[in-house]
Length: 442
Image (tube, rainbow, N blue to C red; front, side, top):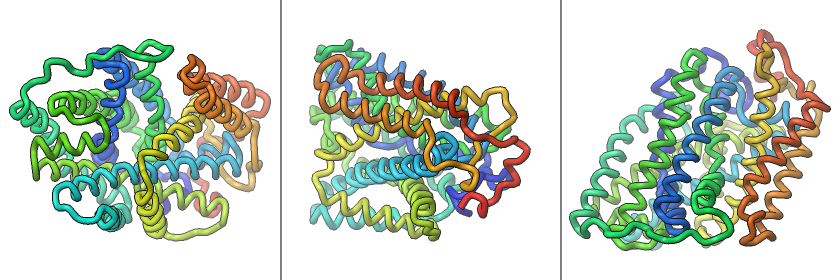
């Protein structure tokens, strides 16, 4: 099947637990440990926990709305963006989505390569190549056919690894007497800063959209709470985060991506390497899947280039390897900050869009021949994102700079409401949606 070219028909929807296990691959990303440790190092443990709880609540509400809409319509981020932004705007959405997914491939793949080098030695560039090479065939199959089985098998091993790393770190080093007992610096309360740090990874909401479209409508309540909702984010952000904060404090390693690797390897040796390998393999299956499907959508829309998805998996792998050869951390966090602004604005506009469609038996119009190249919604998206980037870059340590994601969200939401009232997004009757086929959308 094509992953981004047409409305997901009911016959292609994934069973409840298959989709859940495929999505829960994202639970095991080392990035969540890194984010939590970075937050704790900046604002302290208590404020980080408050920020985590508020983040889980926000993600739970927003992803409940997004996942239900995606399951109801069967649309991807790109197809939904067509109605909101027009054809050009939707292409930009897929490009940003694909680029962000590739950046996460770089980060998570680098963790595996660093762990292998620290254990076995050798050139890091060769480990980068090996990590990319084995990920490509894993990510080339249809997600419903293999990803759920792979991640259902690996999930208990990762969960056991989290328990054991805490036990081993405590036995070897003793329980830490203080855990990130630092005062928050900056113009905002620490818990607000922590919450804003987690706003930088709202890309998970776009991830949710592309996965949730594969869910069956009768499972929307289950997926809205367990698969994509607060249950998932409780374990992903809070459990992962607290484990990461604890082991970094117990082992005395720095709170960097290398420090996380050192903590696992130093505490558990080869089993620590196995946990890192399993966790990063799980997350990268999802990263490569979303990167390749959105590269496919972008190339199809812009260049009219229709190629099998496995080709785009290889393209994503090549790009990932090339980026790994650079100084990853120096540019990765800056790139993610910029893209995070675009993502926050997209989420705000999507929520307004869905709210304005409430109670109507319609779905977004997605056929190319019935859509403009650009809409007022696209203008709102660009303007709100530009304001967010300017605040991020030039407002520095001021309140406005720190609140850039929130200001971006408010501008995008208000702008979308005004734009959609003046130029309502085009829709079609819900009964007409199943009649749309791939030929209409390509």
